[in-house]
Structure formats: C-alpha cells, structure tokens
Image (cartoon, rainbow, N blue to C red; front, side, top):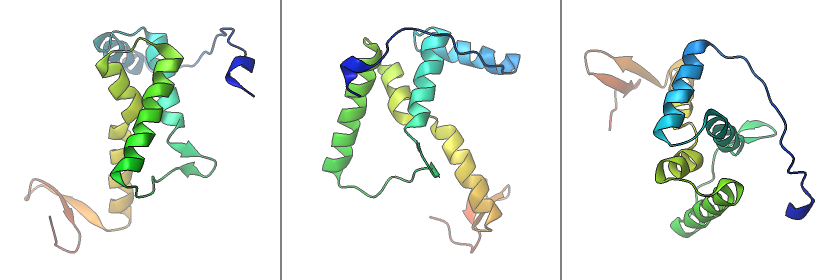
Amino acid sequence: MGESDRDTARTVVQTYVPAYQRDQWDEHAEQLGMSRSEFVRSMVQAGRREFGPEGPETAPAASNGESQESLDDQVREELAASAPLSWDALLAAVTGDIESQLETTLQRLQENDELRYSGRQGGYVLEDGESA
C-alpha cells in the first residue's frame, strides 16, 4: 500500500491508565508543546519502531554512516507524519522510551547475575567485581 493509498481519516482510540500516569503524560506533553493526543501518538509510534515480530529488536552494530542514514530516515518519517515538530518533540520521537529500555536491561542483567546495585559503591557494578 502506497502512502497515497492510506486511509487518513481520524478515529478514536481509548485506553485506561492510572491518573498519575495521565498527569505525567500531560506534563511531558506540555513541556514538548504537544497535546496529549500528539504526545501519546508520537510515543506509540516511537515505541513501535523498537519492536519486531519477536519482541524488542537489538540494533545491529552499524558504522556511523549507516547510523546517520537511519536517523535521517527517522527524522524524515516523523516530520512527514506531524510537522512542524520542536527539537524536544523530535528528540523524544527518535530516542523512544530509553528510560524503560534501560530499566528492562538492568533488571535482565541482575536476574542473570551479571550486575548488581551496590549502595556502598554508589551505583551498579558488574557481578564479577569489574567496573569500568
């Protein structure tokens, strides 16, 4: 299906979240100069790029040129979908939810006994005692 063949009619999507989460979304959307709808739509689209049929994708190692081309494509896609976008909105769109990704990674590495949080050392450390 080509870009011109897409049905661009608007429709309602409804979901239920805790009030505190909606308030966080509203605050972040306001900081980005977006409506709640724009914010949620942007975050969902950004998150969808991170998932393939088998779950979260791990980006293959790429040269700087390949990485730059990918970022160029993401910026073009975001602007085509909802221009104009502020710097903050573009940043949020291309970085996705990095905090959740980091939290998931840290949990997985802790479950695999690869790292732990050390209050004495003031942060996360590798379980074998090595720290960079």
